[in-house]
Image (cartoon, rainbow, N blue to C red; front, side, top):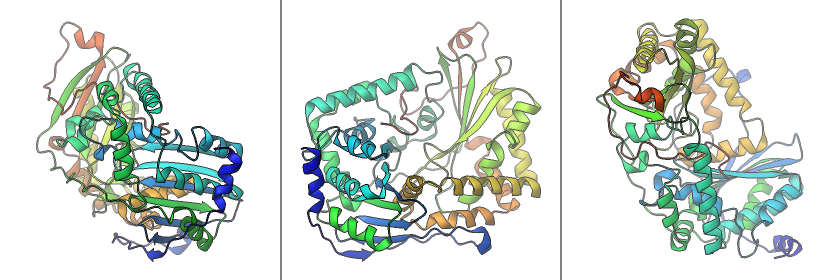
Length: 488
């Protein structure tokens, strides 16, 4: 379709009735009003089940748009590992009304940009454009929610694109993402939580057009999606435009979700791996996170920042600066932040360590530093510093319109309540030293830990090299991993 014809389609009247969304119950905490930024959030649900979030901000004539679908790597078909990520790519390959290339040309032609990414519990699509292009972008997003241009040539092309990503990010990259893919395979038992979300070449090649059509039908309907609009638009106009462009898309049955819950680890798990490309050894140590929204959730986020949040953190000072056995250390929460998981996820410490040291020495040092927190908790100054940094990072992440839209849509997808965005700072502020002490003792106990020691291949094969007890993960240890962000 020519672009002029596409734009004329904006004149088509679309309508739907709005019904109020039901927010999920969340923990309560308070902080002085002067220290809060209560983002204006209007939430409604259209008759077809689409949740619409509008957050007005008239500081610049720009809008950010996020469409989040409640499907990710946990729900992809068995035998089709990597399919959720592959499908994300296909969403940019055109529709019968807006052929391949139109979406990108319309976005960038007006000075905007777009992207998408795949996570365990959701797939998100984001756009930022001048407010004058808002209706155009909503038409385009609604168009690809209706249907895609399903064809064999496009599928083959995107299968090759994803396979090339695997080559670049995993097969030909030191460490190959073991700290956020292989560690899941070791720490979790259920296929939905542990399998390779980037996908094996064999599984990607087996995906066919019937798989693509069924995936769009089952998971890309309006009743399985959240639309968020942030920027120079009123709540009333944002909702009216959502009705106009999305309102006539029929709701679709969504397959029942499996029980993703996992019991806590009762005994440590460990795996040794070799790495042909790594120059220095590294390890990943992971523990199950508390259930989302539980009393231990916010304290665990604060603990993670205390332990590995930058050069002032406990483990950096203790292992890198103090004992000088690690070259660096950082924390991960799967592929998301500590606030955006819908099922089991891990708190993971990733450290590269000196070749003249060992994984056992690094783990013993970690245990020693964690034990200090579990015994005495953080002092007042450290707790204040960590909470201030967490709050600053949270608010900074909401500054951009498209980032704010995406956060609101993702939170509503996994929590059922976009208002969590305004409560997370209060939960952080309410965490006490005793809370941090409690979660350190309970969740980060050595017997609850899964560890992968990843050493350069030459060191792994060297005569006399130490060999730790190994455990077999639920899938191949060398499996590829999904891109952390901007997967397209």
